[in-house]
Length: 192
Image 1 (cartoon, helix red, strand yellow):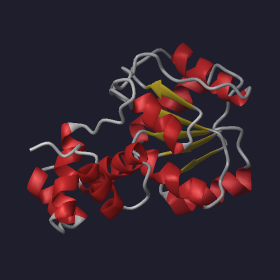
Image 2 (cartoon, rainbow, N blue to C red):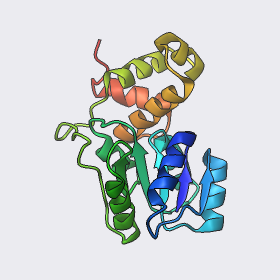
Image 3 (cartoon, one colour):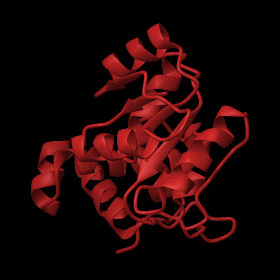
Image 4 (tube, one colour):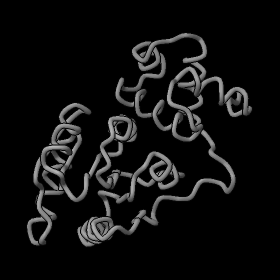
């Protein structure tokens, strides 16, 4: 298994959780370049990717990396399973859940079965609704703001802006921020 993400605490928890199982962490990576390189070199059975990895997952798939992916998140989020599935993940798991659930999800994906955490509430049927924060980010994109300007305006981190844009792109079925703004505006999803 390849473990990718920026949170050292989460990586340490995963290593401890897997210590008593047959599952092993073959490598750890941060960022698209290193993750793509290690995924190719190590040929892991599964890639465990932090929630902020939705954008990274898109980059990896665009580079032809086809390793099965499980996204790990710290809190339940409405529509997260659907977003992960649309981005090309094979599963999700909550870090706040039990070690048994983490292990079960990884084993399922290694067997070729999808495993999406049931604690993530489903998004409304037939909708790819944007969260209020995603709408805020896209409105600022429409005004021509950079990611740094958006982060400053909304008082959130730069990485959070990237994550929100990636999620919006997945929900709207586009690959670029400008296209996400145009699609959201065209669908009437940017509420005042």
